[in-house]
Length: 239
Picture (tube, helix red, strand yellow):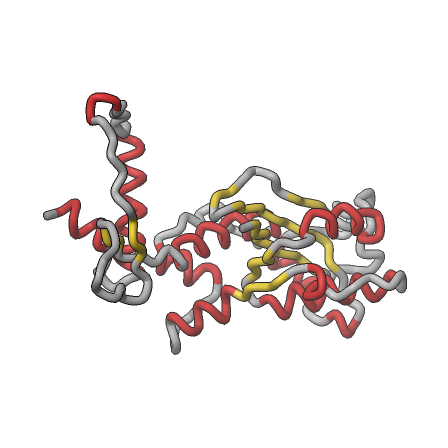
């Protein structure tokens, strides 16, 4: 499964007022693993950036003077995202701006949802945590994701942070039933694993380093916090 975690920065809040995209940041994941094949570009919007927007992301008109325009990069961008699932926090905002850029080109470009499936992590977070704050900073705090470098919004930085949040938020556990053909009906979420005969002397044991054990402990703590103390791996390690 190929997923693209995407974020944008813009000149303002309303595409209907012809506000434009000035930064696109994407992080590719295949089978829930970041590949390093990211997409990042700054764009010349041909209009003045709202002062309030500059306060949020720190991108100035002067910085963008020599940057490409959306039509210059659209073929590479569409080729990059085609067929993937886009993972976006508050998807209507980013998708709305991307569709606006497509329409401005007047070249018959399709809407984003005809190119990709779109998963909105804000909708997902609101379902999991109703009545709570579910912006990216709140989710970082809830899931113990490091956002200490986020003094300003940035499309690529926010996409990287959202990728971490998404992986923790969707890291639910399934019960694994070891055995051959079980006569009992499995509960939802369980998988049946057949036994594999392996000679013990053929196994090579690679032990985790202290750093890896520390990172493992941090991830278990994050899962335990997100699941209200029901992380089975953490319970097993403390037994």
